[in-house]
Structure formats: C-alpha cells, structure tokens
Length: 154
Image (cartoon, rainbow, N blue to C red):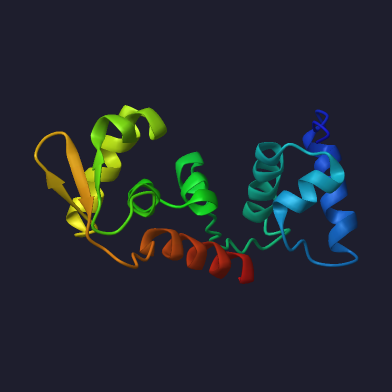
C-alpha cells in the first residue's frame, strides 16, 4: 500500500472540489487511497468545508469484522473438543496422557472440558476419557462458517 504524501489543506480542498464537480465521493477511504491523502487530513478539510456550507457530509456507519487467529484455526481445522472426540473410538477409553502427547496438554484440557459439557466424552477416573457421542456435530465451526459466509455476501 502506498503511504499518503502530506498534502496541504488547500491541495486537499482543490482535489475535493474537482472530484465533486464530476461525482459524489461515495467512500472517503477509497478517495484517500486514490488520491494519496491521509484520512485524518481529509476529515479535517471536509469538516471545515461543511461548516462553511461548501459540502454536505453524510456519515454512514460501516461495520466490519475480522476473525481472530483462534477463530480461523477453528474454521480451518474444527474445534478442539470436536477433534479430540473424533480421535477416540466410540465406547473406547483413551488415556489423557496419550491424548496430551498427541494434541498437547493445554489443548486437551480445553477440549475435554468442552466435550464433557456437550456430553461427547465422559471422564473415566482422572487418567482416561471415554467417547459417548457417535456422531458429534461441530456446531461452533458451522456457526463460524455461517458468519463468514454471511459477511462475505453483504
């Protein structure tokens, strides 16, 4: 991305007037990128022009979202509780130590707590878990997929 060069208020005002003579400015961020103007500088000039009633400003609320790295990992690979659960055969016991060796201690801690809540796994003493769920559904991953799909459509 090209860094905007420092332009004077008069230069920015001239660019605004020339642009408005042809069409409205639909998006100030796009306008700044196109003309290499700092957004805060543009904002100041536009407010000054609005006070003098040279321009009318319509502020539009824009909502954006960004998925976190953890959310992206769940989206790509599934949630820890789902992955841990499907790694164990239905009705079979799995040693916590073996799962920690495979997935990592913190991962297993989080995954087992959530899998217990969902009744996908049950504890078998302190050293093992047993898979209960025959066909678990990774609802959190599906929810993330739905959100991402919805925002990509909008």
